[in-house]
Image 1 (tube, rainbow over the protein chains, first blue to last red):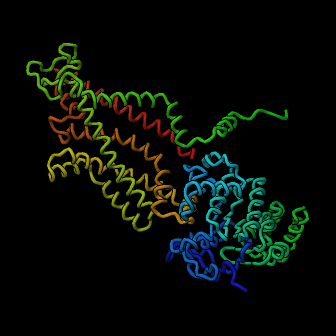
Image 2 (tube, helix red, strand yellow; image 1 turned 135 degrees about the vertical axis):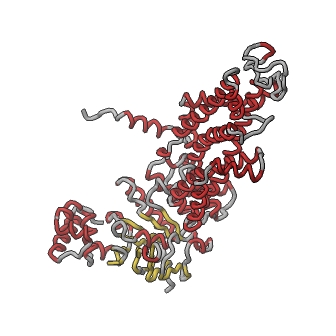
Image 3 (cartoon, rainbow over the protein chains, first blue to last red; image 1 turned 180 degrees about the vertical axis):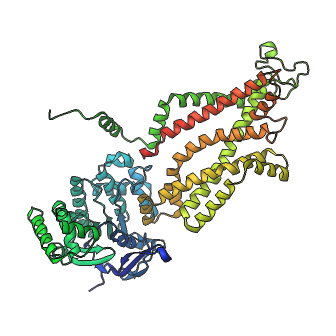
Amino acid sequence: MSSPLLQIRDLVIDYGKGADRFRALHGCSFDLEPGQVMAVVGESGSGKSSLVRAVAGLVAPASGEMLLDGQVLPPLRQRPPHTRRMIQMVFQDPGASLNPLHRVQAIIEEPLRVTGYGDAAGRKRRVAELMDMTQLSADLATRRPRELSGGQKQRVAIARALAMEPRILIADEALSALDFTTQDHVSRLLSDLRRDLNLAMLFVSHDMRSVRRMADDVCVIEKGHVVEQGAVSDVLYNPKSAYTRLLLAAALNPRAALSDPRLAEALENGEAVSEDALKGVMDIIRGGALMGDAR
Amino acid sequence: MAFTSPPAEKTEMMERAAVRGRSLWDDARARLLRNRAAVASLVLLGILTFLAFIGPLLWVHDSSFIYRDRVQIPPGLENWHLFGTDAQGRDLLARTLVGLRMSLMVGVVATAVSLVIGVIWGATAGFIGGRVDQLMMRIVDVLYSLPFIFFVIILMVVFGRNIILIFVAIGAVEWLTMARIVRGQTIALKGMEFVEAARAAGVSQFSIIRRHIVPNVLGPVVVYVTLTIPAVILAESFLSFLGLGVQEPLTSLGNLISNGARDMEVAPWTLIVPALTMMLTLFCFNFIGDGLRDAIDPKDR
């Protein structure tokens, strides 16, 4: 059996130096196979973004190992071009991830220029292809980001990432800034792309609904520690860690989760939850699952 | 009622969304052209600039020719001394036009110097960050605390009086604020996701600064430039008024005002004409700057 596409071993990420040092991630390991979607979930500030930003090369890890096709994955600036293009990222805020002064055409074309793709006409054809793949109508090519809707902007960001022909797509909360219906459209687009291109994905989210729909595996991170990891069907339907249960409860029925004072307090302080309270959580989860959100 | 008409702001937003393919700059231009004070100032400044550069070539009197028998003639049609003559018998209109030309040149050149240094310094400090940034901005702080006049006098003493020195002296002071503005903007932009996306795609540092940082910094910079030009013109006038500025036979508005102030009891027009010209020019620049600031509203980005 060949080695997995991406191997992450004991990855540790620090911010700051000396006394100001803050450890954002205390060791995380996983494998990603071609075409596999791994969800990374946790509260904001849990370190999930740091993890995927390290994979994208935007943050240098303090220790640990990242291997792509068995080769060491260095920080962005030292990555050779063919390695760099393998891993591309779609960001959370579609308003900030596109240069406001550039037209859609120029935005999607930029990575093509960098990789020296064809001549001007060839690049134009390729941009049209990419826009078609991401279900953007051709007349949007001359628009600027502020003349696009949130969903359209995110599609442009996806098209730009795909221009590099990556094998791993990182979606860092790529759906969370969108409204519900748009989330559905964009997540369906991502699923289609994954199927058509055999694209592996790191899917960062705090939305259990889209995790359940998109991901094969899930990695739950609490305050920089991986608390639970495994197939979505195991982790989300039979959560072992209290933190996962709380996340699920909060996601499925936030009102019920917060109306229970023991849970609310535990959520706020991040403390371990008593067995008694967990029974309540499991009721909420089952309730949520029964509320028609099964897959 | 199930259907109510949408609120006014919303319809306006919808209308704006319906306008297709217009850039930020098109919008800014449209807003600027709706601003009457700014448009009037643009036209007036255009006329003044045209007169200052073409006028002296066409006008019947030469700015440095001395009519010995026509000293301090009041404004009138006699011999075409429309704005009268000064204490040496030189035509005041010709001198005012030449003075305006000098003031505009000092304003534009010194501002251009401050723009180039300020943008490069600020963008470098902001983009590199860390210790380099600290060091570069401390240098700016030190220069800021230098008293301007003191600095100019030292330059004069060391290098002698020279028109170039005035550009250097004013430019050396004005780029500091520019550098701070550009640095702040660069730091804000550097963290933006579109810059990170460009990095992830492998766009080179230089291309990122050129394609993503500088164009997005340009808005506030353009506004600051139009407000710096009048400040520079004023600074030059101040130096000339103190006798540290432009030297005869060259002249500037500040120089003319200084001479006019000396003779204002016997020949008030020698003060009033250059002073009014300067006022008009500064008004124009300030109105244009204000108009631009309103037109390029950062909140719209």
